[in-house]
View 1 (cartoon, one colour):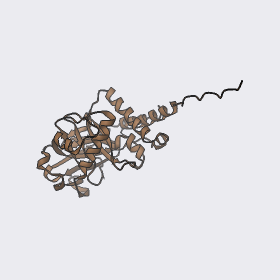
View 2 (cartoon, rainbow, N blue to C red):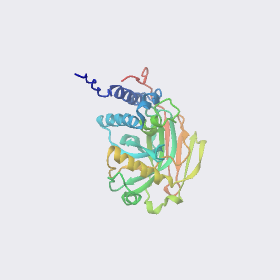
View 3 (tube, rainbow, N blue to C red):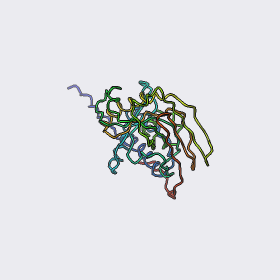
View 4 (cartoon, one colour):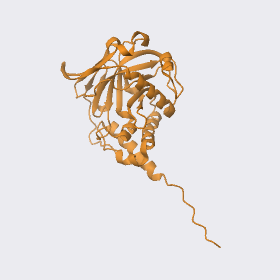
Amino acid sequence: MEQQPPQMRPWDEAPKFAALAKAANILYNAQLASRPGPPIADLLSPYGIEGADEARMLNLRRGQAEGRRVAGRIAGKARAADGLPEFGYLFADTIHADGATLPGDQLTRPQVAASIGFVLGTPLEHADTTPAELFAATAYVVPVLLVLSSRTRGDGGDPLEHVADNTGYGHVVLGSHPVRLADAPLHTIQAGIQVLADGAPLTAGPSRDAVPALLGAMAAIRRSIKAIGPVAAGEVVVGGPLTDVLELPLGATANAALGPLGSVGSTHVAAAEIEGFEPLVTV
């Protein structure tokens, strides 16, 4: 009787789950410690964009289990496969009013840029949402100060790390003067960013056209609906950086100006460090 070949064993995915959980833990604990953890690109690279997205989702689910809720979506860097921006989610406790201070214990490597937020009056539910549907659902637009807070010591250029780190966004600060979209056509708006220390300009970025905010918002809506579900009424959809990204030193104030939408600002203030706490690198 001819001997039968042995059956192939199912692929063991335990190493994959362990690597992605380790990457998610590094990001989570770096946020707790307010200090960047080690790069995670090597943990993610065997599993590609799907693995990076799963690491991001692990920390989304962890936050939701702790009682945090998603209250916004945001556009990140373009994905190489299709040239469209990646998306990030915004928890409610990372969305602030104009003039809010940003405690150092909530930031790692803070950088700032100007953008525009589309605040929805009605929900968006479809992963193929059209620009017309976004216009119809938008109650008003506001200027936004983006606060990036990369949680690893990488150079920020690795696309997988960018996805797993929720596109690097830590917080957003919303302007206090809502404007109807019809009263502020995007092609008329120029976005500028400035960082000041002791009232004197420290760094500034040149003004840029605001039209790309719509493209970023559309990509963030479509990708995020597919990944985490509909965008609810009251959520803010932020179109990603419209200006240069500037460092925000401790004690400095950032101001974003967007023409007819007004301006929005925030100050990076000191906070007590947790002595002896280091980001974890194990599962």
